[in-house]
Image (cartoon, rainbow, N blue to C red; front, side, top):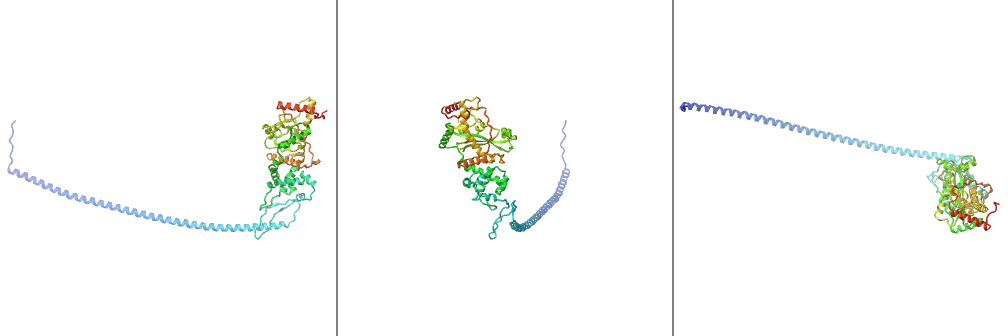
Length: 502
């Protein structure tokens, strides 16, 4: 293939291209200047919009701050108004409270004045009335000192003529002993012993009951066994007051007099008791006679069957309930040990096992001492009882007669106890928990009367009745059985045995 020759331009062609390029550059500069003018206008419009936005935001912030300040001012104003209202209400309530208290105080003072005036009027009217023997209501007013009035309690006016008459020095001694089962000197001694415990102080409402009257209420109640209503009429006191006095004095007797007048004998006194019993029966080392009796009671609310006394029910032909009283007496019939309060259905041997005497013997404190019991007690190393089996020999009969003589001391002591204190013969009104204290007080008072040789009237006589039941295990010790046989033979061979059985 052939190569074509390069074309060459003429001078006219070059001028044409130059003009074309010049026009193109001019147009280009015009377009650029127009674009520059349009861009500046756009920039000016954008800045105006931004300024407007900023101004709006600033206006909004200023408006919001003004609203917030307004709200704060309104809240403060409302708070001030509430505080002012509360303070006004509080001041009004305080004022009302002060007025109410003043009014209440004035009303109370007025009521007190009216009450005092009414009491004075009633007291003046009551003092002008003549009281009959049945008694009427009266008011005791202490004498006035200046403007002070001593207030007294309203009490029922009961006649105290009987007590005032019997407490005089010129009252017959025999009549006093018939009512209180003791002489006036013994009664005074008991009052002196109990004075520190029984005495009460006077109060603003009433005067205390004197010691002699307190003791007299208790002893008269124990001696006669009369109901509390009768005691109330005799002494001019309330029924509940009499019941309270009986218990208080009985507790005082247990606390003060029992350690002095009812205690286990000392070695020296036990030696004397042994000599007296030996002189009575010929049996050596007898330190006491033991017996168990029953005291009737009202049917208790609990454990009724335990207190049911079958033997007394069959004998009296009516249901009987009782508690037991086990006692040991010396040769003079003075109690040296008592065990009170076990149910009446319990046999004598079980009562003995539950007593403090049984514990004393188990501790070894009754060595070389015989306590003589009856057929209801078992034969033990320290308890001597009669023969109970059939077909007794002469020696055994004679021994039983001597045992019966010693037992007679205990039976006479219990017969005197029940004859002197009539409350032991009747069903008592005392609660079961207080009964041992009352019965113990009777035993202590019995000892005081016996030690002071107080006489017994025939009209006080009481027939003692207590059936004896032979225990199932009547012999608890083979040694004691041999000792009893030896004592029986000693009595027979030394001509000390009884002959009444012949």
